[in-house]
Figure: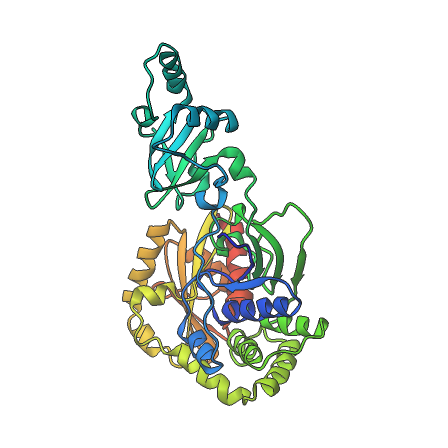
Length: 427
Ligand SMILES: [Mn+2]
């Protein structure tokens, strides 16, 4: 991360809103002369792929974590000694660089270090007339060194160490260098809960947050930041409103992406999370993008609803989000399909995949919402000893790790709140 653009990102396991609202908001920032770049926290799903292809927008780069690397933090201003240096050159080096050792290179290749202490011994011999012509004999391997790709938080805190990049001397690293490293600035869209943010956010700096979810806690900032949360159906609705607020015209392809996100999050206005603001934004965006909402929307949802080539593990992880309450962490995944039959037919296999995921990550429970876009209902299946929580949440009979929930489509509004409330009561 040498050049420091501001990153704009959605959540892990990104959905269409997280991908599109980050691209659109980064674009708005660019239109306002801010050096913002959209990134993504994970792989793109099929629905999003359909939208990106349709409006001919390339997906943004993937960023796996925000951990500061040794390359980010290293001091690259101190030149190494050459293997052919004379003792006098070395003496000069130690007088300029107040260090206990000097890195040594041979034609750019790192060959070891010389210690100031052994150098001093040599200086005494030198006075007695046993002069060494070069420092070569004093060079030895360092006990500890770091590679540019190592994480800065793994660097020992008690000294200064050599940094190597592909066999070559790169610079030096110490705790003070790490503390002075410029932090990556990040704008979070479509999420705010720590568990859903790209790993290592504590080593970066959140400078804005735009979202339409519950405030889940977990991020704290050093200074005041711009925050805009609204209880609407989609982050892209808020981003559309921000283009209006700042009097910026929405480019055609961006309008297409924002529209796609709203259709996705509101399931073509069917979800109970959908508000008049989402519909109004959608109408406006459709006019700019030049598409028919219903026609385009159904094609896009269908592209995403085709899970026929996903493995049970991929289905179990689809659109997965983590939530925590009372020290219990649970995962809730969701697949939206035109017809739930195929998935319900393989329920046992899916439950096994959920159980594998649950034990692998030590979740209290792993839930999967199998949501029918057509019936506007959800079959919720789950792994883990969670019958009590599910029963209390929905007051429904549980049949073999499954509960049928008519008129339920929204994880955020209809699944997460009752479940977290039940965990609070029961655990
Ligand atoms: Mn969203």
